[in-house]
Image (cartoon, rainbow, N blue to C red; front, side, top):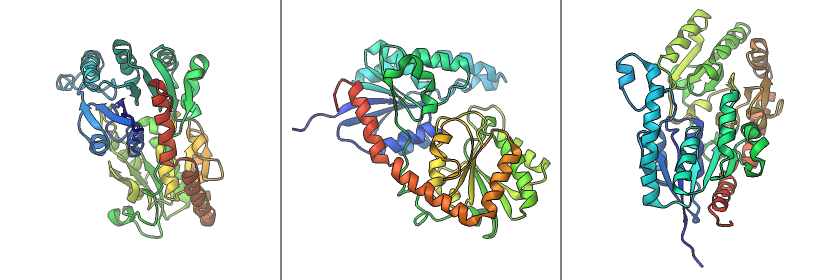
Length: 399
């Protein structure tokens, strides 16, 4: 007998192409007749354009993505970027009131919190409305104050379950909320990231030759992404490998109040590698660029919970080199789909790139193993089913 679908309110303030937003997009691309999704987010944009075909959208401008950037322009007009922080105290208070009205309108059975700032806001919303809450942890809180705060939030009675995309992101919840924790990795549709259907674009667009060995980076342009380390390592690698080229695919982080992209462009010039480095800027669809990589580097200097771009490269049969911490070491097996290197070790990263350059057959075998791993362990329908089961359980409906 047919039953009415359960309404789930997804709180998502990650709208500028970050991993959390893209992971929610991947989840909602897999429809489930048991679920009626409603997504609350700050404004139309990259993620909204993708989500509007899969879910009803509710826009709450005060629901900010990061505390360092408020929805108000006056802090920048008075040249006081620090003022975004207190301004967001007011913004989030207003966001809570608007979200209460969204709850009253759509009457969800459960609230799913998809991003870091969605968790405290979602917990407050659940406590105020009585709607149970599910956290989806996609971050490693390496600062003790962050870890203590989110661990405390996870112990609230209204928070019924905590989905973590890796053991790295689950660590802060294990000690006090272990019964609530379940590990469900991010997913990736291997059919969309298939070398047979993705037409490479990077080399043609930026004048790179077929014989060039292209090392690639994909991500937000931010210091914690390890771009300084990558540039220094590439300079060392390129000195021994003349065909080496570096492509940095990504735009400035919206939370920054300076032009980081310009800073790294100057750094490449100072290192004497400017003619070998391409900065593409932000690209909504990274597939045609990653498909032209010979190797992808994930050099994050702060531990990240997963590293979705690792799956994207692996699905496109590109071997990867990753910093050896966080959830990345759960996605990539050292010596199988790529290499691990110690954080900020310039010599080790340069050596790993040289190994891939010298052993092309071995690199191609790593790429094939990466593709097989994505198909085997990160298939979207299986991952989505597990997430939806948890949401229904939290809503009081045994799946």
